[in-house]
Length: 186
Image (cartoon, rainbow, N blue to C red):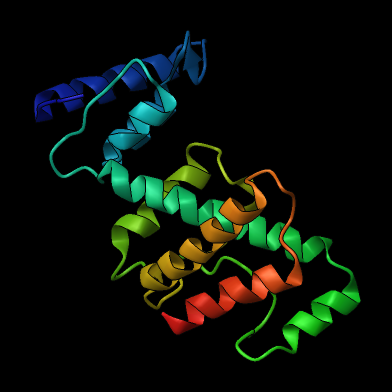
C-alpha cells in the first residue's frame, strides 16, 4: 500500500472517527486501532499479514524480510520455552548443568538501540497483532545484540525440525542443548 503523508493523515483521522463511533474498535473487517498503530509505528508489512486485501510497502517501512525473520525467531523461542517447561525437573536440572547453558531457555528480546527494526517488529507482533501471546508483558529489550545469535540458533532449530518433521512434537534436552550451543558459537 503506497500512501503519501497526506493519505496517512487521512487514514489516521478516519481511524479516529471510526474508533469514536459506537461500533468500537472494529468496524466491519477493519480494526481502526490496528490501522493507526501500523501507520504510527511504520509497520506497513503488518497490513499484508493482518489484512490480506492490502498489499505493498512504503518507503521507510520495516522490510517484510525482517518481519519474517522475527516471526521465525519468536516461533523458535516459543517452541524452546514450551519444550523446557514440559520436561521433568530432573531433565531440566540436567540441561541447566551443561556447559554453555546459562539458565532456562527464555526469549531475552532484541537490542532496542542497535536492532531497532527487529525489536519494533517483535513488540508489534505481540502487542498489536496478538501473536506469540506468551511473550506479552515481557521487556523485549535485551540491551545487547542478539540477531546473529538467533540466526545461528534458528538454523539449528530448522535443521532439527527438518530431520524430525515439523510436527514431530516438543524438543528434547539434546535438541535444546544443540540450539543453545549454536547460539553461543555465533
